[in-house]
Image (cartoon, rainbow, N blue to C red):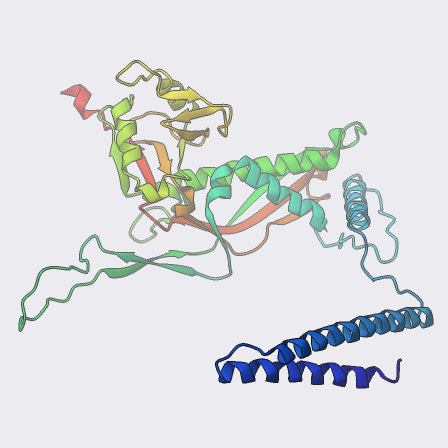
Amino acid sequence: MFKNRKGMIEKKNDLITRAEEIVNNADLEKRELTEDEAAELAEIRDDVRKIKEKLQIMDEIDAGREKERKPEMKPDVKPEVEVEMEQRAIEQREEEAFEAYIRGVVANTRAGDPINLTETAGGAMIPKTIAKRIIEEVYNICPILERSTKYNTKGDLVIPYYDEDTTAITVAFAQEFTDLTSSVGTFTGITLKSYLAGALTLVSRSLINNTDINLTDFVVRRMALNIARFLENVLLNGGVVSGTGTPQDPYVKVLGLSTATVGVTAAAATAITADELIDLQGSIKDMFQQNAIWIMNTKTRTAIRKLKDEVGRYLLQDDVSAAFGKTLLGKDVYVSDNMPEMEADAIAVYYGDMRGLATKFSEDMNIQVLREKYATMHAIGCVGWVDFDAQIENQQAIAALKMGDGSAASE
């Protein structure tokens, strides 16, 4: 450390203070700087520059001395590539342990390995890595769930909704000394509860014993397919949880998209016209059009492919940039086997922004492997549980095309 460092800093500050006094005095007297004042300022500027250069050199010398006294400490941060390799190694050991378990082999885990294969009375929990992959694949298979607004919370979830359909805040011309009439919309809400659903996949032991099969990927695909098909069906059509439908034992139902209040009713029971599709698209306000999509059955899409506009162009167009290579009136078309076909009173087409559908999950998917329960069937069971509910939270965002009841054809 240089002993005269403090004095140099004080001298620099004094010079700067003197320069400020010269400039301020000239400003107060509303005059230009004199030749002597300008010369003094130039000298001050030169002296301050020299002092700063000396101080910078002193800092560099002090830093070099400090570095020589202390050994260079490497930051306790692992390179990104090293972190990624370690994570992949963890996932690989979890997958190997999972395959070993369902083959009945004891996994040889090292101390400190984060592999969670806790033994239970019925089997073992699947490692976190594999459970995560199942959830991701469910979302890939089920785009309706992926596009919905998802809430992860326990207990009932109430989503408020402001309704101006019946009574709205009105603005009108008025006169002085005349009372205004108060008006306001009403607040309603939808309640999302928690309904438990489960899926079971049986895996053949003969298949497991075939070492050429990737068992982890097989189990993931089977379980993901079962859960995805169930969830998509409930989201599109609603699903009865319990009840007989009687006043004493009413239905309890996951509503999904089945409560859509905006839409169009087709004139026919088994056919859709181009005008009806245009009316369905037009029933959604412009602010929801950007992310809007079509959802329909494969057979419905085939029928719509034959429809033409007034100049003879097909409504359904090929588009390589679209989700599935097809667009209808400029929007992506999704097909699902869970959608009803064009039948009397059935909802054959949905259109809109699926973020208007609220889905609530109370807990992460719980997956278990059951080794002993199905031993007499020469199989192993994989069971998955999900706790969820779904309902439209914004009726303006989603519209439905309902088929006619067939009465027009009979008249």
